[in-house]
Length: 258
Image (cartoon, rainbow, N blue to C red; front, side):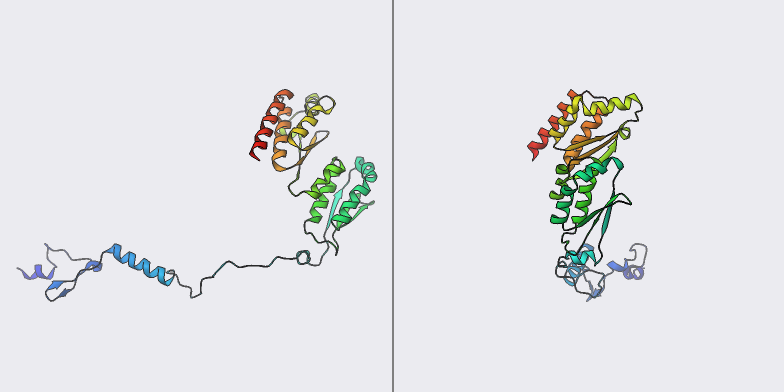
């Protein structure tokens, strides 16, 4: 009964798996490499010959390098226009400060500007002399800031600097107040003779406009965040002395960081 055992198909010797079968050579056995060695060898072959999914295309040597696009190409030959509506109570200030608004937009930004009497809009338009792509956006923000109530000198910083922004919100966005409660909240923000508002502006290096229940803040991102936090605390009922201490501590930490 030795025949079946020698063939390797009997009960005492189970059949070997196809991957681990051995072949007899001269009465002995040949050693089959382990799986880990086979995997390592396959990985080496993959690393030498590329990925397993071969698309037949060569790998790119470096990143594509695109030349800068000129302002004329971005404008695509069409003149763009922005319209800023002017409310009735800002007609007189706009008329008095028109030359201060007109000069930087036309001479420095190389744009065209006019006030349309029929539609009551300030219209700003690009032309052939316009070189800067962002000039139209800067001019529109400048005029919009003046229309909201900022001084021309403060709004002009939007043209000169790149990291300035405008943020607007209402008192009722923070807390739904009505009647005398809303009036008292606006009074807390302004303070006696505007003292509280001026203090917040000086500490946070921003400019704030109170237009009825609307609040407009002009400044950098971090400074707007500090001023908005102070204004919201005043709306929620915090005493001004506590708000002063908080914004001074935050401003001093920000100054040390930079």
